[in-house]
Image (cartoon, rainbow, N blue to C red):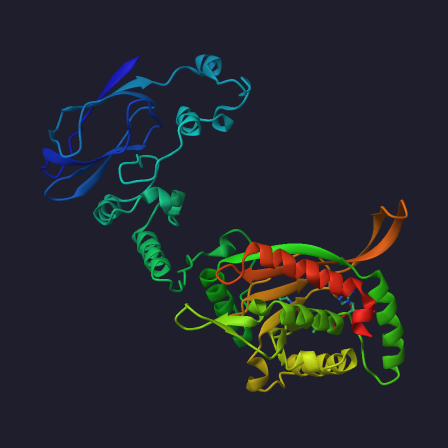
Length: 420
Ligand code: CAO
């Protein structure tokens, strides 16, 4: 059955208005209360909601039309009874499915014809006030691109402002601080509020900046450290007599520096113009340390000139002082590459965030025993495998170089002679 939708009395003495947005097109399925038209009169902007559910058969008005009370707006084919809807369900949709779990006619249309983002896209299924709609039209912003934070995901003026700010900042290569919605979480259960430490706040800002300004790629790889484990255990036993704790980390630092010497672009920074690469001939490694105050990254200098034992001592020293808040500001500066090791805690792989102005960071996860096929001996043997990830700035480093770095790093770890 077809129903005519006519322009209702707009009240407040308004009997004519201009069509500023037609939010539905022929073939669209509309629900009761969906916005189908936005009008602007001398006095106000207003949304006209659908008073029926069904499919648009005819659109009788156009953008810019001056329309009056009682004028025909749309012809709508009213929604069919549930039984008939089931017969119309597309292939792959179970007839017994509850109506709300079944794709709407509109969403089926969207699947077959990809949505084109642009000013002319229908936004009738989006909640936004006429003022917001008008502003978005004036600024050429497609409301579909914005996530509404209001009730029923309504797009508020602040959402629109935030969206525009973000787009402008991204276009200018700048940093965006999102306005977080002020939500009362206690409406869903008990909560407590904890103040972020200064370290967490500063680190958070730096991480956000890095994440937004550096095009990250993360390369995952593994190294067979079975022989290195045996070697480390022997060294650890001897060093324990001198109260030095030898973990895997100093070996990883030595191996990293070896690769940095061979592939200098990983030990570099882009200069302020972004047109030159500054290659550093010193090897100062930042080491991420987990402290009660938050993540701290002290720098161990001249790693290429230190032995595994000297690095072990240096690590014990800086990690203890980091946790006791005893690091000097200078000890947090001048790093050329960072290692973040979660190996003492767990996990298989993770994607570390580059620590600017550096261009790459190594993330180390926990080693595990694994059955590995040895094709030469034609047998399966247990091997101790170290998973790791390398994140790098794709402005500086190509994917091929990233993969070459991780392969070379693994090869060095697998050859224990390199550490003797
Ligand atoms: N696989 C298996 N075991 C590992 C390992 C690995 N990849 N890495 C460390 N271990 C072992 C160590 O050998 C040690 O065991 P033993 O006493 O038997 O030798 C144990 O785990 C604990 O090591 P550790 O964590 O105390 O020492 P470390 O040198 O490996 O790391 C430090 C030092 C300061 C880096 C570490 O304590 C730390 O703070 N890590 C967290 C870093 C972090 O938070 N990164 C996240 C940044 S992104 O948010």
